Length: 404
Image (cartoon, rainbow, N blue to C red; front, side, top):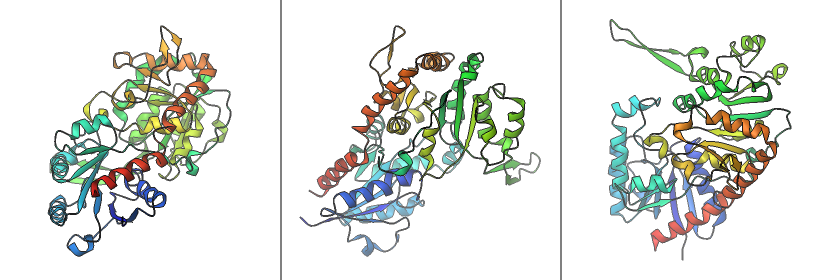
């Protein structure tokens, strides 16, 4: 059998492009060099059909280009030539109103365009069985290829230093304010124990712009966002309970928003960790012992991947997560009648957001051996399913089945 030529069109070089397009297909090429020839092109020609005729499979994230009409036209031409089209989906197409890109998506009807792209493509790949079930409403040909980790990547091999405090960490982006607000009332109950804890917020970023609208003229004017206006300042207020859990001296330093480390305050009950590029961000898991994964109950979150579970597991971190959507796929609650069982995480019911985040943190504070045990159990779960070496075998078999 001759090699299968695969063209991969990532959405970007970083973020989703790294996890869903670039790295998985580099692995495919390296692991199966006799079976596949892979080319990765972020900007393939849209008007040169001859360019595509050397490929049997074209894989793209949502669409081949941001111009959906051009993408639709090209996909039809590819299908007419017998070239298999595979659309990869990692996020639900209808973000909630509290999501930063909601208005842009709805104004430009991008949600409708993505659904049309799903309908048109020969096959769809996606992250979880839950999302696959939703996508099948528009295209029956769905195959699950979960997000996966390259365990040999240096950013997943960082050593965690020892600490006298139990370090509780959250690592994420700028679209999670509604999720983190679930923690607020529960964190207020930690006031008498906060000195034994350190909260670590990773990914802090004050860059960006804000649009101001003149109420009289309707004029839109963009300006650089002030650090105190960013969502990260709101995150910090939640984790410090409006700076109540830090010293006045440290509060003054934090509110200067200087992008630097604060070694003189390393023993404080809160640690700010600035953003890192996608090639090294996971090193921040080495800065804490327990990972938090709160998500608000709505459709967009239910369709998310379990990447936070996977990352925490490869770092052998104890995990406290919302008992919802993607976190129900691999996680098993390890408390029964107040006693620890053989589960691999602590899961918070939606009706218990007001108290159980703090309750479970305090349980782990009183049972430090369980932090290690839970981390080991989670590693055992994810390492058998979400190692990129394993998922690449499934990808190879899937692609081969399309050509057969």
